[in-house]
Amino acid sequence: MFRTLLIPTALAAVSLLSSQLPPEPSSAAVLNPFAGSWSGTFGNGEFTGETTLKISPSGMAKGTAHIESIGYSATIVGIVLSDGHFNLIAINDDTPGGIDITCGDFTISDDHLVTLNWGVAETGCDTPGMWQDLELQ
Image (cartoon, rainbow, N blue to C red; front, side, top):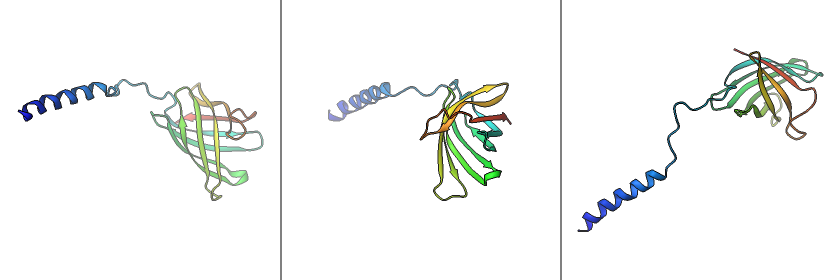
């Protein structure tokens, strides 16, 4: 008799739990509009550098930045949200422990990824004069 009651009770519990789980993601989920492999230039008036940035469909970003005139080379990792806001960490390849945390907003204009604003997190995400212009590869 105990076994007879246990099986229907266990099935009811599994049914209740499965009805509380979140739905599976849809295959028609919206992908990040900034996804792709980008490369181009960036700077602030004092320097100009070259950068590459690969943004996955989920918004994860990875790339490189180089400013030859000041000997700066960095690996970039971070996230770009679907609304264009980004938070990126540039890990200076030449200075142990040297990192810059940048933030701002991207937009796409004429198939170019450009910044609306950009800055270092400590001073704000809207540093005047910072720009970036990357082409989709």
